[in-house]
Image (cartoon, rainbow, N blue to C red; front, side, top):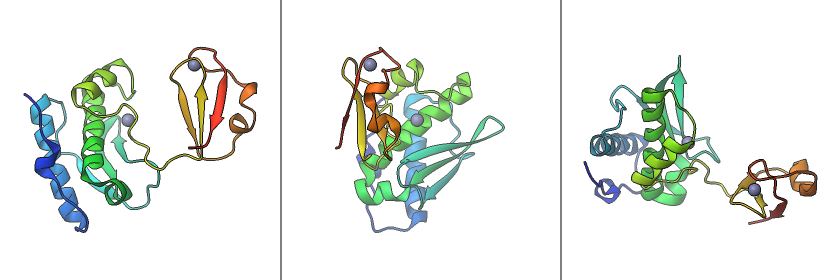
Length: 171
Ligand SMILES: [Zn+2]
Ligand SMILES: [Zn+2]
């Protein structure tokens, strides 16, 4: 048990996707061991997505079981290994909670583990949205990538969390 330094496993572009995934796998195994997570790194398929523009990572499921973890190549190219390592930890928490509790959410259990593993609760997005719709009363912040009605007429809506008003900002 204890801290795993992501730096020990650091890899930087340019490298092949195979090299990248090999490093990701070794790092994932170290994280699973250090935090006693229920995740079988060898049984999971580890994949690179060259198309993902916003999602840093994702878990793919089959019949409710985690089957693959996918990491966005652009995340690696744009933000480097540190961001990839944080995303690997994030996705491993999903695998763990699905396996242990059938829980795919970012709820309380996720939050606790995200805190222990030093990763974001919402780290799966890496392209800045064009608009942020923020609650004036609480911490709710909604990214929007197109000019939806919520963006055009925030006054027509209330925060689902607290009932507060929304404001719209561009980053
Ligand atoms: Zn997530
Ligand atoms: Zn609110």
